[in-house]
Length: 376
Ligand SMILES: NC(=O)c1ccc[n+]([C@@H]2O[C@H](COP(=O)([O-])OP(=O)(O)OC[C@H]3O[C@@H](n4cnc5c(N)ncnc54)[C@H](O)[C@@H]3O)[C@@H](O)[C@H]2O)c1
Ligand SMILES: [Zn+2]
Image 1 (tube, rainbow, N blue to C red):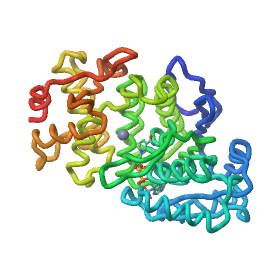
Image 2 (cartoon, rainbow, N blue to C red):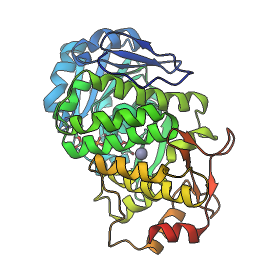
Image 3 (cartoon, protein in one colour):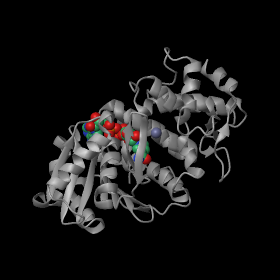
Image 4 (tube, rainbow, N blue to C red):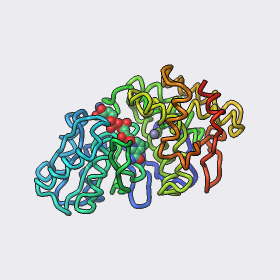
């Protein structure tokens, strides 16, 4: 491993290999290994043995990587389904199209799904696997930074509905997660940037050294350079999410800390008509919410300034869009499904590397006027 000044969290069960790392989530492992795509056959055979495989991918990722993965799985027993790219395709209709196609192709209970793509493919293919024949195995092969460090870890699958994002779904743990950082070399820069926002979030909520690592290595990654140092960045981020998920699988308390930057971030993302990428909106949300944390006396002085400087350094947006008013954003936070009984709760840091709250409650109610002040 090239660089790795970020110490894994104490409860980590990660093993360090030379240039790859594996993080255990109890029933499955997340493997972060350059070149893993070509050797995926062994991992899948071991963790999700099946007679036939369904690779679900999208129109951008498929042409680049599906053939390689199919060859590793055995082309003769593998079928590739390619869906149009984009959040607008994470729907029940697409779920129906895929499951109909699998049924028409004679897939049965002895099959398994390989989700090859970003979070959209991961969530959709995961939901297909969760429901097909009442559940068949899925191996997640995330190809965006966001999917590697966030979407593929934790077992949440699902689709969007006209009433909102991710409203219909299921918990369905993958049999394995295989992240090959080499694929990040083809990922559009704005998508890399959006993923870095979530990596930064992991640093704020749990690990200051990780925060610094994202800051020091992010710019090179944005410049298109993918080397082995990315293994540690991805793996450390996975460990932070994994640690939270392990301790709080169904969002009782601790998992709420992952929501830092997301209360305002979701509101701003939705108000932008989803023209902002999720990670971009979260970046703005983190800047604003750390400001709230400081003004509310929850975070130590200087926390907000560091978050803002980091967001700017990664060339992420740090200000609310000019066409969104404080009142609009405030109203939108109330329709967030994570707002309980009309009260708007925030997950706030106490400093870089730690969240305010206790094991049973990380939701902090913030008076509307304080939010208004920060939004102004
Ligand atoms: N299940 C969870 O816990 C969880 C957590 C966070 C986010 N999500 C979901 O993840 C989704 C967002 O995922 P995302 O940011 O990965 O977006 P995405 O899946 O839309 O991928 C972004 C874009 O990058 C392209 N792409 C992906 N990998 C590529 C590669 N290696 N090279 C070139 N192009 C590539 C895709 O085709 C797409 O156009 C949202 O639907 C969100 O709800 C789920
Ligand atoms: Zn997020």
